[in-house]
Length: 369
Ligand SMILES: *Cc1c(COP(=O)(O)O)cnc(C)c1O
Image (tube, rainbow, N blue to C red; front, side):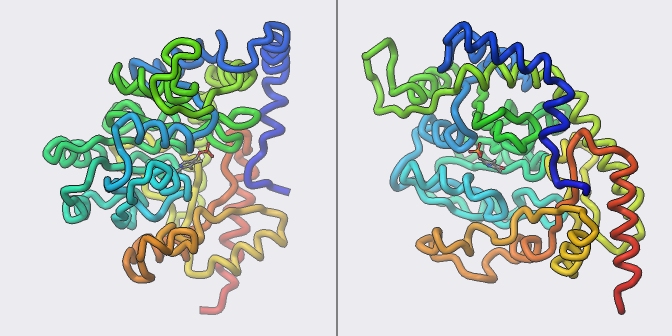
């Protein structure tokens, strides 16, 4: 069986270090925030070339606090994409603001920068690009448009730890960057986790207070806050794993290159990484008009695949109140029907990659025209 992700083999490869890091936290009893989390904040910020890191309990909380720190609330509009994980939109709604969708570019699956300005109104406060699958959005025009209109830029980098745009690490290009450490993400905790990075000291101070009940000092509640703190155990685990993220990212990139080469003449559309981007392949998604059939056939051959994501957010029942309709974002809708994510994780072997590619080739050659 070739699984879609394999968290077990990664754990086994670093078991001794992880186990002793966890034991250390148990003995220190610093179960919430504490010295391991503080050290992780500094190390992860440095990894992103950002000045500050604020550790939180999930990537969704990271987005929520970033929006609040930017002063976003009821009556405001935030521009983002419908082709993303639902959390991007949910976080905007938590603040009382309204998500305003812009379609994706059909090649990179990130926000179509040529459609942003038409979506700006006098209520627009922020742009929230998503570095989907691990490929950075086109940040230079996004920053230029944002500066011209006085908008804040918050990066959803939940899938893009270590990705680079024109030599700059994502998360530190916009005003605030948000990461998820959900177990299956490129840097995954053994439970939930998230991180916010920023170069802005005021935003940072606000977000540090908001994640911990709005306290400036103990029991002095300056803001109406939340319990969004990171566990000490997750901080310790993530510090160990951060030491391996570059090697794991390079392994993902090598697997992607091998898939690209083996699938070049398959009839599938393989991912396009723009030359100025360092794509970190959280997801390796091909496109096909025969997705359901292919997925089912691969499944029979014990090759697991995924779909990220089958329904764009503007067509989800939960967000019907935003009053979008089918046809509003054609590139997002077509991608949602056609993308198929192949097995992708650092511990995949070249043999497994070629098995997956060969199965796809065989299946596609057997399809009647
Ligand atoms: C995973 C993810 C999130 C949410 O992160 P959680 O840690 O699961 O809350 C937000 N945005 C995107 C694009 C994601 O993939």
